[in-house]
Length: 325
Length: 301
Image (cartoon, rainbow over all chains, first blue to last red; front, side, top):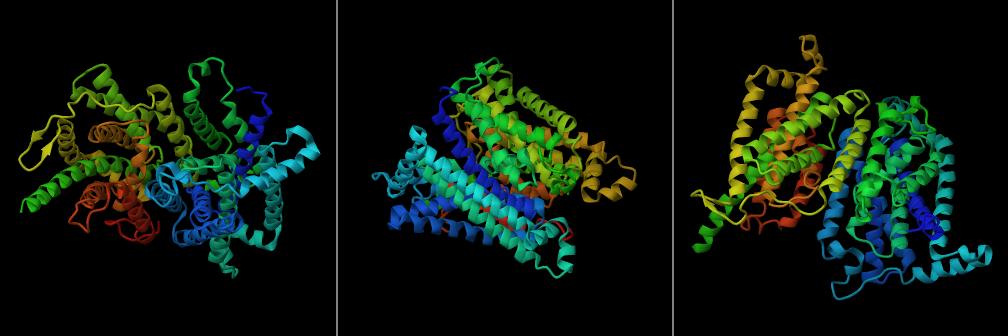
């Protein structure tokens, strides 16, 4: 593929924006409330599956199916409240990653969810199930409107790009305000010293639950946008590595800088997609079919190196780093 | 009548399989629990150490056609060397970074190892040079040659490791540090220097476990160890973090329970594809209600 092909980079931008949303959801839970969720991708999976199932099997309107998907993610957030209150960081990390793998495993094996083929198999092997019938005309109408404004650059991916990044931008502004509000300050106090915050009469558990719910909403939204962007999905689209992409985005930008998330997301997008184009030696030894492995190898390597050398990320402050605890 | 006899022999077969799988989980879980308890690393790359062992064994057994014992020794040495190398290059310089940070690092390390194997060895399923169709009748169960070898390895390795932990100075030292680091330190134990031995044991056992797992499964690919990572973490928690005997026992129990749960007279039997879900549920419930493990006593974790 041509490195200068704008259509490709628009797609990369969409993906980066959606991962950015996932990273923002993680930010609320991990950077603000100090809860290391290693199974964050479960929010995406649950919301996407709920939405697709309701549209395909119950003929629910897409909007309400989407709302239900986010509600399912919120329910998962509340469910996570039980281990989050009981468990210390490391145990919570393992419990959450096991939980997300359980969701992926069940969706691979249940007939209801279409098994390993995913959303297209939700009506059984003889039907081709789709949940995007109502979405296509909507995104086309946006594209038509954008075409008036910016000309032929506007494609459906371009519309999606605008939609995702406007959503991300608005949410970033919202969370920045939240972080500076009294609510955000209590959250920070809890992250730094739970007992101290509790001794001042703050209801620590309620705040943690609020962070889990907020993370669930944004994570669920990321899952629904992702499902709409790719059109069909399967359990393989919700691999545990996705959670660690979100961590990498947080670390790239700065673990405790909410406005650094888009920077991290763009860097991650370039890093992740850029490997498709690097064809000089020794990378030329790797054929295109194996590039996916190379990409994951590089993601892992960057994660290790960043954590080792600059865990606070590009813009973070080391003193505020909860990872040191 | 015939059916009852059949169910009985099926149960014996499941218990045998469960003990072999349990021995694999016990040996790797033991390494993981020592690493977690002594080195304060929840090693998310442990499964990939196993996979690497399986591929070294493949290289020795198939590519260079050495005999199985040489292949096993070579595997154990190679994975121990890898574990020690990563300890000195990466994990030791970063000690004290906090459990979550180190977990993220081992997640990244696992990604690197796994995908490097995909690139170098390819994604096609591999199998060892064992006759997969031959059957050996042991009287109570009938096993394939590969299962016999893993059975022998399990019967030798588990008691040997238990004896090492119980009676040798190194075993006692490791258990002491895992149990109470401060107390061990003021008794004159070099709690930093012991890391080398912990990683030798953990790496060697992960390599052996990986090769055994590959043998039991028949075919394997670079996801081999990652697929059982959560079972290993379950074993660690089941036995109580840092509790070496707990991990050995926990591994054997988990292996047998998971196999026997598929036995039809047992509530109709759990369908095999849901076996891992049983493991996940056990792990989550344990973490929430008994994080100190089945043998552990409650204390601040």
